[in-house]
Image (cartoon, rainbow, N blue to C red; front, side, top):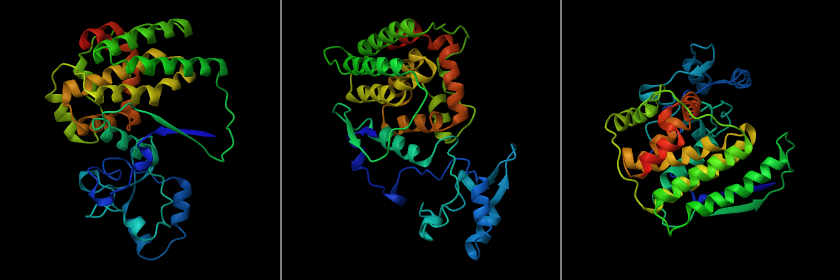
Length: 308
């Protein structure tokens, strides 16, 4: 199987307690049935600690009762995991970061914190591992069509003869052409203010709420990070159109991505906050995906106006 990752990915080293954020704070932590059965086999202090924090949410799921500031009960004062310190053998818990696994969270934290630091093109490293190809039911013809189209999308993003805003507008028009060839797409008509889009129902970090409250539309700059933001969304979501034939919404996300620093702050922490609040909450992400198709302010032509 071929694995593709951003070129700087392997250079990542966990800095443990010195991390500016924590995967063990802000998320609901679920314990699945298999884990619960495993816990019954434990004894000693770790069993007592686990039993003392198990609870149930409104949906009947067994969860770890969080401490203040939504911290995992096993996250100590040094922002290290007591389960890992105990040896890691108790890590049977299913850390459901509101729909995303920990490795995905780690990958996107890396990207969102790196995204404003690079002045280079986002390049992908390919590596062949020993895992056999996995069978699936995707449309092979559509897959290769999108793969080729994604290369064209990258060419548009990195055409430095044009200002970033013109590149993103060109990318939106390209996506609309692709969409017409793949499947009909009806733009949204629901009246919703652009900044209302970012009022997520599930709040992970109140800092984002303040960012949205104080947000104002600014100018999208020609800084290199806007290229990387665009490239990130194309890398992360473009090919998922093979499952739903919705290519335009994926590219709209790239356009909105470059508006994030223009509206809420041109720093890597702002981009990271948006990613954590939206991409890592299944509830918020489902709402966002729906708004991409229903909100008039997120129509292709409306986004082009915001970019101009």
